[in-house]
Length: 418
Ligand code: GDP
Image (tube, rainbow, N blue to C red; front, side, top):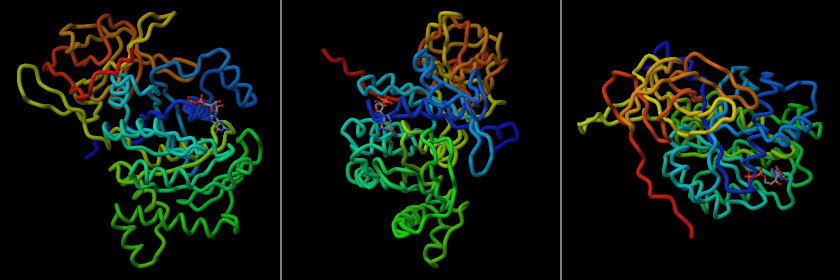
């Protein structure tokens, strides 16, 4: 049951973007930060500035996505509801197993980016298996739909054959390669056509007649996958009735969180096509902190395990997952708060180092600005200034609380190449 003080968590998504090198992780992340910043005018983003200018300027200054966790806001295009999306930097290099483990522990869901001209490559398979191992629900983004050789069907069949997963196509591209001009949303049954090169002008319409056969075929696959996991959709499926949009979203969401189905989307991050719909899908299908298993910890000197459900009123349980040196403020400790609330100026207990430590200031990191806050609540990620001793992977709990260490995931040592 959700208490009143937990309700804000329904509007939180903590996600990583996983891809092997070159599939378009950086471009996709930049576009996400552009669109989320644009809607909400965070920092220096001006609505009047041309998209490409802004992104190129950022690239030159090299200040995008240097934070281990970036907080963005997104208003769902169909429902208008606002969400906080924390994007956790996920290492693309598969050799850094420990780094991957740390990032996987602090995210609740992931977007797996594929290059649709290549399908599922051996390296993307490794990334996928890692997410499997850590039990991370995910959606797939079939990127580079504009590129020669791009094929959405190839990605779908590779997901099935090479990854052994059931793909749920929730979109279908209108045109591929240089003809790629829009995306059909198979859940809401709407066509989104991009009418300028920047991808900022989108016309929404009924599905053009020429795609209807393909849409029926793809939608049948989708409904079948949804029926497997949800009784309401199954009933309608058996009676030959169409499920409603809400029923479809609910079923696909359930299947995604249970890791039984994997929604597949398409687009071109480089050509700014599909990123807004990708953000809508993050909100629709990836879990909130309330929908993932609560993190567990071990009580000191005992075999007893305690759980920390995501609740701002619970006992503080946080994990330091990345330490960064900042030229202005010094040592920044990135934390995920699983339970309780961390206050600026308070004392915490580092259960790993067995030392008290003081939280100085707290920051929420945005794409190109920092926001100082007085507290970080359960489900949130941010950076602490002032902690002297915290190292990556350390457990932080309330000063004076029962000593507990957050569980670690059993992974092999990183592969060191000579
Ligand atoms: P990362 O290594 O996964 O972070 O990949 P990048 O985002 O750096 O992209 C790798 C290369 O692919 C760059 O040259 C990008 O410009 C290009 N790229 C990324 N997205 C797209 C896309 O949607 N279409 C095309 N044609 N190229 C893309």
